[in-house]
Picture 1 (cartoon, one colour):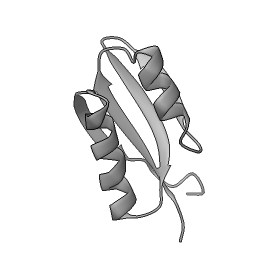
Picture 2 (tube, helix red, strand yellow; picture 1 turned 90 degrees about the vertical axis):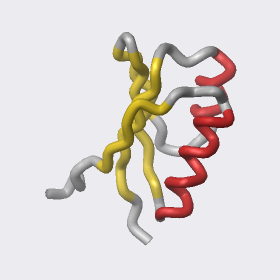
Picture 3 (cartoon, one colour; picture 1 turned 45 degrees about the vertical axis):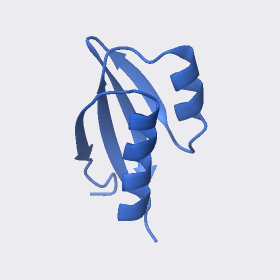
Picture 4 (cartoon, helix red, strand yellow; picture 1 turned 90 degrees about the horizontal axis):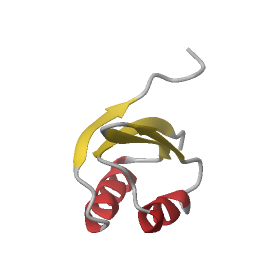
Length: 74
């Protein structure tokens, strides 16, 4: 199944623990953009997306927005 690229914006900066935990996902890029942090990552399906959102919330991160990014091949 093709992966879709997503942008997850969370409030504030990620702690070292959160950066390490999020960094364990494949194809993840973390970009500080004060006062938020942007996390770019690949999502395989809706269940995967919900799992990522639950994981971010479990880390205590406040999710500001989630956007599917355009396909890079377009």
